[in-house]
Image 1 (tube, rainbow, N blue to C red):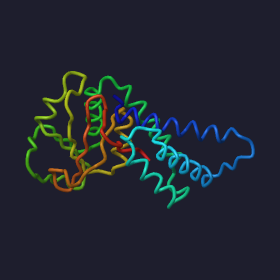
Image 2 (image 1 turned 135 degrees about the horizontal axis):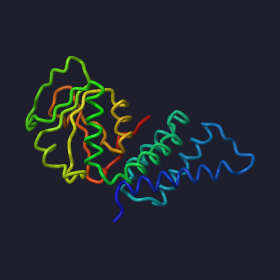
Image 3 (image 1 turned 120 degrees about the horizontal axis):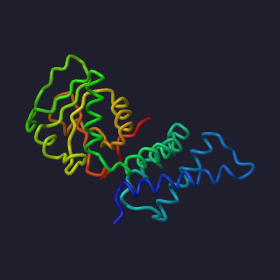
Length: 208
């Protein structure tokens, strides 16, 4: 059975290949606007023909809408390149538990407030004096990591610049879910999830 990760990576690589084939032809306009228009049409055709897994249908519909309304501003070629790079690296990560520990160590080294020894089962408030902060419930941190492996999903409650968070996650080959403020149990934080084997069920947080 195809996973979301496999589906989104297959789609991104097919789009990149289509763009490269177009660029190889003579007398082809290679401006950002022309490339975005081509990819938007390519995506629309792929959706109509159901060429790719229905797992990514919502994302594909949104990107087509963005391409039609924003043109080159939708940055569709860049989007596919980022998906390809981040997902290929993350899907090859066989020691996600170890990666997560190294990720947290780097955050602490960057003067983040990192709390791993608090049980988070109800709404809480963290006074971090404006510093970037991350909280993982003690029960999850101790019980969902087995050696170098992540065996159950972990929720990270984070208050920080989201692109800085994405950059550090990418550095450690970790796929984080999109941030969800409504799902967070820590005031002024967003909830992000990490899944075993980096198997996100929907589009991960991408580095711009």
